[in-house]
Length: 113
Image (cartoon, rainbow, N blue to C red; front, side, top):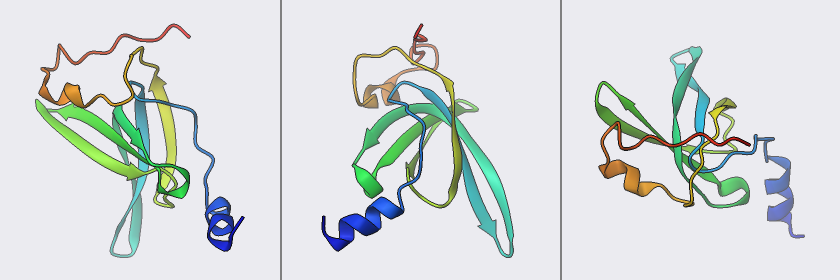
């Protein structure tokens, strides 16, 4: 194991097990001047990509009829915690097709596991 791998292993965070299709709530730290607050972004995970320290997740939510996506680095120090709200039952690893669907058509069935 080289030096870079050792440094990456030390900075990895403990994250819950989730996959694309799950509804998650990401608690993200935002710094405004000297103040720091936590903003919650809740939506469906449409993609998880990368590995190790470079892993990211893409979360999509619809607010006021407009779809919003945000990409979070999974092991960032800015992420306070990730909560899993619902488990989804899907068959794909990437759910990019949801971008073109309406609110009602983009619903995901809940997993019974």
